[in-house]
Length: 283
Image 1 (tube, rainbow, N blue to C red):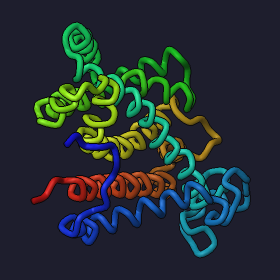
Image 2: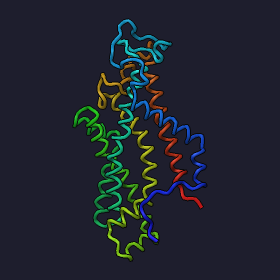
Image 3: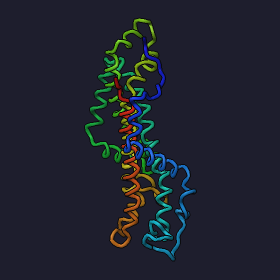
Image 4: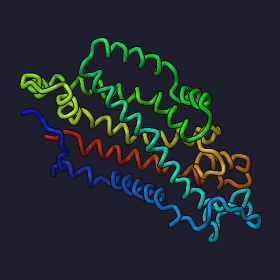
């Protein structure tokens, strides 16, 4: 019988993945990060952009948990508000790559032929250069800013999703249910998007979770270089860049946003590993 497009609830054998401490830790970090991104005003005690010249470069204390910067702004509040920008990066820097990559990879993997040859040349042209170098080059042409950063990442990043999707679709074509769909006279669209895609998409989703962590790191790197988010917007890369000149006298300015990057990336990675175990076929 040809498989339908629907998502099954995890079997009992899969529930082991839900009990893994690493997965639960990652889920806790991810839920906390999303909460901070959606409701920063509930957690931040101060306005992140208000200057206080009576509290310049104060170390961490009960009044300012992460200290203050060279303009007297509360670092804890700025790190909290940066969650909104960086979690937005994780989503918008990858969601378009995911959508385009799935669509193109599914079509190329199914039809092959000339489309596959053209796609192969496109992949070769892009992966020849380091990913970060290409993104920086595109942003340099378009200009700094979050929107241009998303465009640059999408123009380069969709290829990696498409390549993975193509390989999975080609692997699924060898199964009996794919041949049965053709024998039964189903249209190509139905075979691709209702039968092949649901069975081939799991590795792509797992890769997406990992890529969101990398998107945060990439967005922070571009912000540090002045090509991503722009001051005075609170963003982890911007905060680290602002604190680099005071690393010996105000170490907390760069350390605290750096810790936030590591923790959030860890959350995405642990959840991605858990999803891998959860969706892995078991006997």
